[in-house]
Amino acid sequence: MDYVNISLERADGIGRLTLSRPEALNALDKATGEEILDAVEHLRSDESVRVVVITGAGRAFSAGGDVKEMARSGAELSEAFFKQLLGTLNRSILAIAEMPKPVLAAVNGIAAGLGFNLALAADIRVAARSAEFTQAFVKIGLIPDGGGTFFLPRLVGWARATELIMTARTVSSEEALRLGIVNEVVDDSEFATSVDAWAHRLAAAPTAALGRVKQLLAHSLTADLKSQLRFEREMQMASGRTADFREGVTAFVEKRAPRFTGK
Image 1 (cartoon, one colour):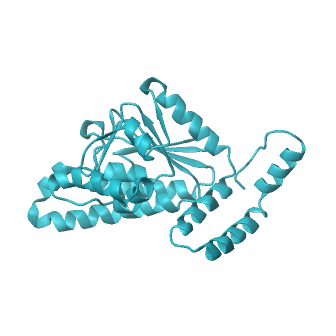
Image 2: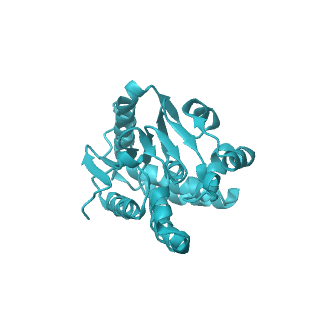
Image 3: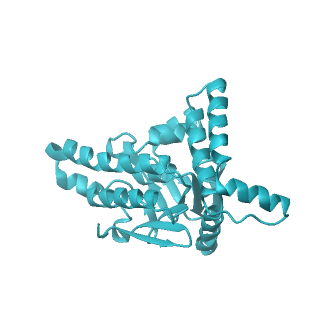
């Protein structure tokens, strides 16, 4: 697929997916959703990519669903619009959450509505100090989509998630850090450098082990202790068969830094 609304770069084990509609604050329309899904699927299958970074061009991460496109669709077409847009983007959200490699959301500016929830699908979120977050849906009579009602309560708790969704208030990057929405807040002037540091650190890690960590954490949301311990044992046995495990043990004995290959 030729991308118009996003850009995709691969280098040094890092796949960078950039939402590239800065004139629309990277709003998510049907065409952008299709491009995101295509890119995520390619990044998932590309063995040279060991970490995925998702960010936005310009001054926004993403303003969410494209309200202008919704208005153009008209009331009689709104159901079809949401069915197409969310059908594609929901598949992208699942692909990000289930990707067997780490995903980093680099939130460079406003993350609103569906854009907020796209960031929540990532494993780690780094925010520029000027970034802001809002579950803006109720402002136009909608409810959260893109997994917002799944991810947000698990990060901030039931009561706080209810407040943020029902009031649609804007959360600063500093408050997002306090609430556990983001992992780090960085001054805007240092944002790109910090994102690169995170990306290279994750790219140098044992990729298969990180992928199993994602599976284990997801499993723990609905598992009891007995089944979780059983799943941990299975995942540990699989990890013990990897080249990265052998390299890690060898490096420990030789008192040097390991050189993981993701195998």
